[in-house]
Length: 256
Image (cartoon, rainbow, N blue to C red; front, side, top):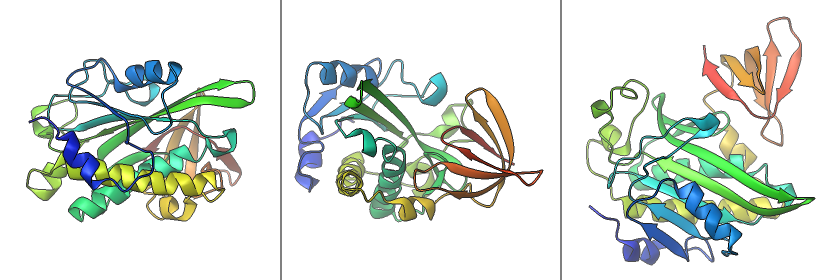
């Protein structure tokens, strides 16, 4: 069933986010379409939405299952200052978690840096790409893939590690409500971050990773230890097994 864009827009409380929407029945990737729009001068807040992606991708070049008519695949075009770039990896998963909690009552958690989980299974993935010229940000693309009504059991490759709102609630969930809540929460958090107040505590309080022994792959190297904390930039503070501590700006975490 196709999304009712009018229903989404009727629920929006945003000033600019999702006010222009590009809605496609099918696209290789919303990231690619959003990049084209950004390069053509699209305003900040443009949301590119597809019912189906034929070449959806997540972090580290992984593919993202994107069947038609079941989930949310959306990329937001933003034009932040350089100082606000790092906060996008805090704002985005927190906005997803808040939207899920508002619309379903489910408690969403975050695996550092920005995977959204429910009961230890992946619900949403986030891909943030930026284009920088000198000291200025030309644009940032925030891609979100959120499993809403996906029957994960029908996809053997992800059946054991992924989940959806339908699986967790036992019912179909209105994608329009979830998308509108996501855009509303995102803009509120993003505006705070642009004012120099990124929502660090709200994000940190949902981190599944803290206090766990983890293995982190970052920039081709591997570190192991206890995830003790995060700093003001969202970097992970890892206590190695030998007692030393290392700061990791971004990476891929395996909970052990």
